[in-house]
Image (cartoon, rainbow, N blue to C red; front, side):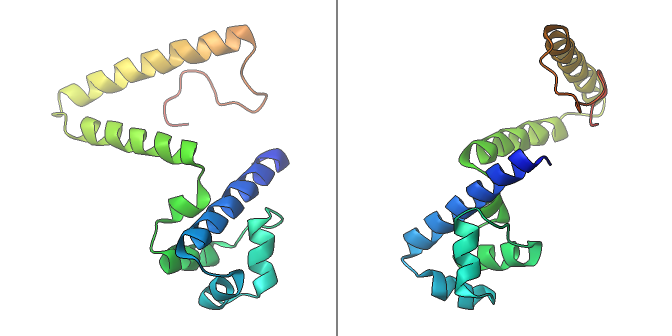
Length: 135
């Protein structure tokens, strides 16, 4: 994860915590006590200055009775994840004869799109190898 991405992630996480807290109408102090940290720690998470460690993300999610995805991911990312889970369920319901066919079709489509991006110079320097599903 690049520094830019970690800054963006910290802002998303902070915003998500702040929004959950506002919905529940509780103070940073109450959240801090519930998850076992200092009040200024919650404030720094909400400002995007620091990321909560994994055990605190779990504690925050339990406190707000939500998933860790609702704490960690942006609305856009959660929407994509829901779409992907739907596709995975559909794939899982295919019979064993159709699964390899679906994988080949999906792989071909992705390879074509990756090649198009590559030819246009849109791929990032650290991007994945062309044509490899799951890498």
